[in-house]
Image 1 (cartoon, rainbow, N blue to C red):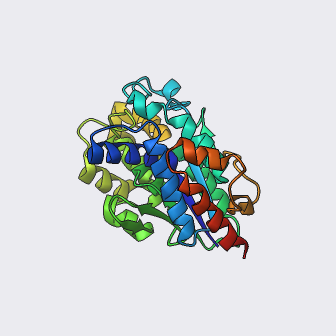
Image 2 (image 1 turned 90 degrees about the horizontal axis):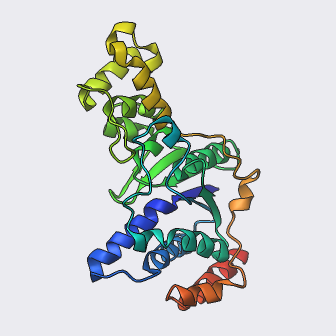
Image 3 (image 1 turned 180 degrees about the vertical axis):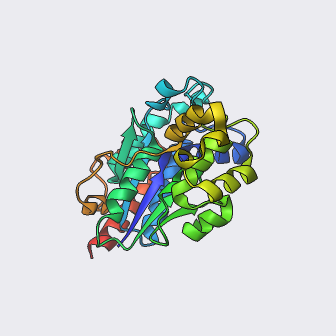
Length: 276
């Protein structure tokens, strides 16, 4: 089986700003509708096992480790108002949904990928997000990253081609170069080329000779902690819990609420086809 893991927060942002560029306005539940349609399209395309991770709140345990780490400040109110409705709508649709509070959606995706990959029945795990953090979860061609924005499927060789380091060294790479989206700056004077050279020469930051980072070593290790995704979230104990089995009775009302009443019939046909 193939397990599809979706970054719901990224998809919500993508749908929100895509619709705003296309129409110049914000429909109250337009981004939610866009995400649900996208998931439905995936199911119509043959996906059977699907899970979606979301940031129920933007903040996480990482905000306690680094004061500059990303927060929910600055998120457009019209977008923020759709966070919880997205989670509720996906649940009503019958899709496995993991709203994260102490951890981030990225941690949920990493944990779900680890759990799914441990099941011998699973022959591929697809993580649907362009987020460079998730590149650390890639394993050969069995756990891959699907970058819809770049129209690429990135296996381990693809991660090396894009970043210059193997998936397991993505946290080292991000610690050195920084991640402006997550709010930590990296190490002064170290850009992408230097980071790749250092990692290629020495391996993990923990194995760098003492003089390489000097007084900045502890800060680099802190940034690596920020960049390292957790894989211990207890999201499910059987991958078959991700098998799509159809929507709940409330979904027809949800479809009307988000402005796409026909989506309920569309989803019913998907479930009927899967059952047969």
